[in-house]
Amino acid sequence: MKLIQNKKNISEYKAWILDFDGTLYYQLPLRICMTFMILIYYLLSPFRLREIFLIKDYRQLREKLFAADEKNFQIKQLEKISEKYKMPVIEIENLLHFWFFEKPLKLIKIFQRKKLIESIIQNQKQGIKMIVYSDYAVDEKITAVDFKPNYTFYSDHELIKCMKPNPIGLKNILKKLNLKADEVLFIGDRDDRDGLCAEGAGVDYLNVKNFKK
Image (tube, rainbow, N blue to C red; front, side):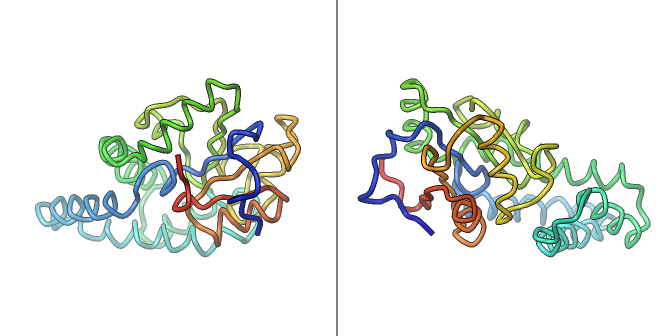
């Protein structure tokens, strides 16, 4: 994959593609806090303990299916979880929304990468398009960080319908926004997902750990 260090200044690109989870905020401290919150919650509600296993199975199944390139994979995933746990899909969706979107919002704001956000805002003011592209829905979580992207896309978006590292979604984004691959920088936190996705689309990639303001 192409790394842009010592090759091209990050301000020379027309657009930045930004992963969200683990890129715009520090994921490890957030996960630690969320783990404590979940443990405390279910210690006080032991009759709902199986929900922990449901959440775990959901994550594992999503990881397993991420490269399956199946249409409507999100719906199929929910249906499989529903069948296993004998729960209506709507209840599963509400549970996942509670733990994946509602509860992390305040923590995302606390643990956001401030130097990266500052640079994003600075370069956005100079005309660089800022595009958030995540495997999970971001429209709600993006409110927790201190900038507004020009565009947001995620795996369930009608333009994407796949998860990283499948490059089809990224290629469709470039086509939709009339951007050439060499005009774009992809900033992410996982070389095995974001990096390979960028490589597959011919886009320069920078791991956020190597980001310097």
